[in-house]
Every structure is written in C-alpha cells, then in structure tokens.
Image (cartoon, rainbow, N blue to C red):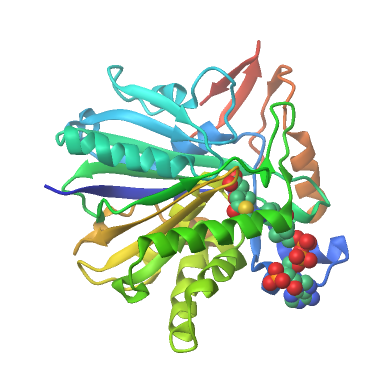
Length: 379
Ligand code: HMG
C-alpha cells in the first residue's frame, strides 16, 4: 500500500492588480517588481472572501466531482492558515458545514506561518498509513497582507490549495523521507492585534536560504534524483535564491528552466503563505511533463521559523487528480486600477461591526455574506 496525494485544486479571488501599474503608482522601476522580485500579477481579496470561504471554494472543486462513497471516507479536515477568522473556533469546523461533510469527522485548524499546510499534509500521510480506508482533506488558505506602500506590498497575494490524502493515491505517493528543522526566530510575525504582518525582509530571506541549505545537506541526495523541486514562493525570485546555493555551472541552466515552470502560477498570484509551496507543486503538475515514478522534492518554509524537505513519487495518471481550472481562473481575472485595490484593501472589516457584504467583485460559489452579532455568515 502507498499513501499520498490523491487530488489537488486551487482557488484565488477573481480580482487582481498588474504589478507594473503598482510600480508606476509607487514611483518604482517596474523591473524591480517583475525581475528583481519576480512577481507580475497579485490577487486582491474582495470583502466577500476570507480564508474560510477561499478554502471552501478550493475544496469544492474536488468534492463536487466525487461520489458519496469517496466523500464518506473523508475522516478529517486539517485546515492550515495564519489568517484565520477566530482566535478560538477552528475554521475547519465551519468548512465542514459549508462543504456539507458528515459530522463524525475530526476538524482542526493548524498554524505555523507558511509551514502549517505541510504539517497538515504529513500528519495526514501518517494518519492514512494507520487507517488506509480513510481520507483527509488538507486545506491551506491565506491572505498575505503587509500594508499599502510597504516594502512587502509587492509580495502580497491570496488563495487556497485543497488536497485529499488517501491510500493508493492518484497523483503521487509520499516517500517518507522528510528532514525538518525549527528555531525560534523573529523574521516575520503578526501579533494578534495586527491585521498586517511585521517582517525583517532581508533577514527573512537569509533564514529561508539557511534553512534550505542546511536541510538540503542533511537530506543528502543528488539533485538529479528529482525531476523538479517545489519551493515555498513568498515571491518567485526567492526560489532562485535558495536553489542557486546548491547548483553549479553545469546544472544551473537546466534547473533554472525547471524552476521557471514551478514559479508560473505564483508569479500571477503572489504569496498565499501556507498554500504557496503547493501552488508551486500544482504548477509543476500542470505545466511540466512528468514521468511515472519520477520524484518531485518539496521545500516548505514557514517564518518563525520551521521548514521541511521531502519528496513524492509521481503516479502514471497524476493528471486525473487535478481539479478546477487554474489557467482559466488566472486568465479570466479582472485587473483593478490601483485606487480601487487600495480602497478594497482598506475596507476589510477587522473590528467585527455588523456588515452586509456586496459581491461586486465576486462570483465565487462560496462567499462571506454578512458579519452579524460577531459571527460570520457564509453562503
Ligand atoms: P525591498 O527591500 O524593497 O527590495 O523589498 P530590494 O531593494 O531588496 O530589491 C529586491 C530585488 O530587486 C533585489 O534583488 C534588487 O537588486 C532588485 P536581490 O538582490 O534580492 O537579488 N532590483 C531590481 N531588479 C531589476 N531592476 C531594477 C531593480 N531594483 C531593484 N530596477 C523584500 C524586498 C522581499 C525584502 C520585501 O518585499 C519583503 O519584505 N517581503 C516580505 C518578506 C518575504 O517575502 N520574505 C521571504 C522569506 S520569508 C518567507 O518566505 C515566509 C513568508 O512567506 C511568511 C510566512 O512564513 O508566513 C514571508
């Protein structure tokens, strides 16, 4: 029996900004954003979406295509987010309700910055190993917010990745080869009173690079054992900065080309924090041509800081496990002018006052409809 990823899907809101436009308004050379940082388009979150509704939209792309037997075998929801909507109640239990999954399952919200989704995934692999007839829905959903006119603004973004973990999976099996590390560092954090992140931008990149370098050495496998590497991509150039540490003149071009494929979607969305590394994986699954039994390495990094490096072995019919139409979702977004983006950014309700949401910028199946008596109501 093997255990791994049976299905994957992605959701991001339908509005976005062109970062060349943002650069012009901010008085920055657009090349800094598109080449120096490596980002092109950034998702914008309308008030009718939050981490829970985005997660529901991503998961629904998979679940709407599954029969009752499959749905009934889902035994838990592991919801990873660092932009959760409540300090006590788990977004996972709300998700269960929205997605109409049965009651006798476990629901839990996980947080460790951008690493949370990976903990969910690995825990799900372990759970299904012990319970091969069960499945786990792992959802990683976030809104990356640094603030208008900050250095981090160009690295914002949002979206959700949903994955089903099962035995005898369709996409790829876990190789049970993880190496990991954690250390209490202040490179990026968001105190409970703040709706935007605090970050030491340069230091955070150094920590990311050091963690990759250390884990790569510990992992101790030749790079050509892998057909691709999915990196956590807070911005797409970060993947190059980490990978370049382990390349040489002979393999640099080949691996840069492979990395370009992994970066394709992230460049168009921005950072989705805990889902980002799995958006890179989705980009590889959809845009590279992968041989059965080839291995894809995954480097997950979360500030604060924790990282894990592991690999998955691709199955022959892996394309059958991809749900939703990511290319269509990305290509059909509406680009907003910068003034509209700024007013949406500032309009998000972080004080819990009663509010009825409009859906001027949103046609997604699941939306945040209302905040009433300190409760979020979804439709
Ligand atoms: P900055 O300080 O404005 O940018 O912010 P810079 O001055 O460092 O320039 C960026 C790059 O553009 C540089 O290249 C410049 O040379 C280049 P580099 O030296 O880095 O290779 N550049 C140009 N290129 C072409 N044409 C030009 C031009 N001008 C400059 N004209 C920074 C950049 C990333 C620091 C900022 O956006 C930031 O703080 N972002 C947030 C933090 C972040 O993403 N950190 C990444 C590692 S931490 C992580 O991954 C975890 C995270 O996802 C959170 C979590 O775990 O929850 C963030």
